[in-house]
Length: 129
Image (cartoon, rainbow, N blue to C red; front, side, top):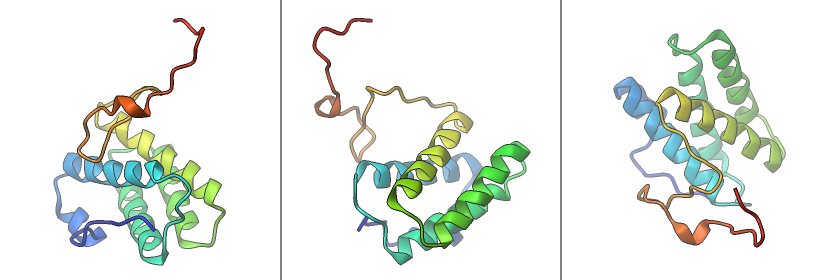
């Protein structure tokens, strides 16, 4: 179970300015992905579906992105394997990172406050870039 803030709802998100809404959704999806193998409960899936539906209605996204969000909302609304949920959450998150001008490399992992958490970085001995 992934704990969402009590005040978080699709209705609340809809009232936020666009960039703030995108950043909030990205942050929640990042938290879910970071939770690992935890499977979202019904309330959380309903939130993800509503958030994805809000994104699908955002005409500043390309038609392809809007379709992806619409498909994500459908996936979150139906029973789906955990791997499909994580893949879709990640896809939505990366579209939001791009839309907000943020980028996250594979080795950049953040904690709940958004600060870089070096303890989550994986080092592969003998690898150089």
